[in-house]
Amino acid sequence: MTQTLKENYLKKIRPSLQKELGLPSIEAVPKLEKITVNTSSRDFKTDKEFLEKTKTWMGLITGQTPLETKAKLSIAAFNLREGEVVGLKVTLRGDRMYDFFQKLTSIVLPRIKDFQGVSQKTIDKRGNYTLGFSEQIVFPEVEYDKIGRIQGLEITISTSAKDAETSLMLLTALGMPFTKEA
Image 1 (cartoon, rainbow, N blue to C red):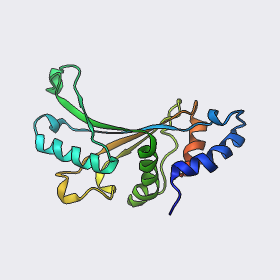
Image 2 (image 1 turned 30 degrees about the vertical axis):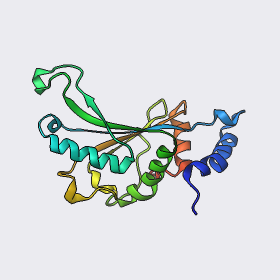
Image 3 (image 1 turned 180 degrees about the vertical axis):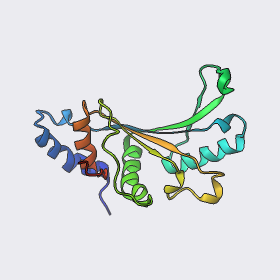
Image 4 (image 1 turned 90 degrees about the vertical axis):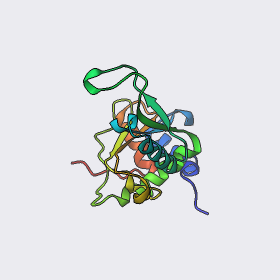
C-alpha cells in the first residue's frame, strides 16, 4: 500500500521544512489549508441541462457536490439578474484536499499536452497558488461524451504560509512540478 501525501507531509516534509526554515515549533510550519475549485458560464441561467452536467463532472473530479454561486447584483449590460446562477464552486479540506492535490500533481498535470511544469509567478503575496485549466477533460474521471461541451476551471490552493517564498517551498516539497525560472 502506498503512503498518502498527508502521511508523507506529517512524517517527512513537515520536519524537514521546520529545519530548513529555522522555525522553533512544528506547528509554525506552513501547511495546506484548503483547495477551491471554481467554474462559471453565462449559459447556466438558460441551459439547466448544461448546469446539471457541469455539477456532475465537478462532483466526479472533486468527490464533493458543488455549491451554486449566484449573482449578488443585477447588471443590465451583462443581461444578469440578481439571484441567477453564475458559477459553481467546491471547497476541499482535510483528507479530500490532500487526495485531490496528489491526483492533481501526479495524474492530471502530466496529462496536459507538452507539459513543462507550472509557473511560479501565480503565487500571491499571501502564499496562495492559483492554477487555471482551459479544459476539464484533463481529469481522468471526465468522459468527453457526457460533459456537453469543453469548459475551463480554476483551482486555488490556499496555504498557511505568510509569503510567496515559503509557499513555494511548501508546494515544491509536496510535489508541485514548477518550471525552472531563469
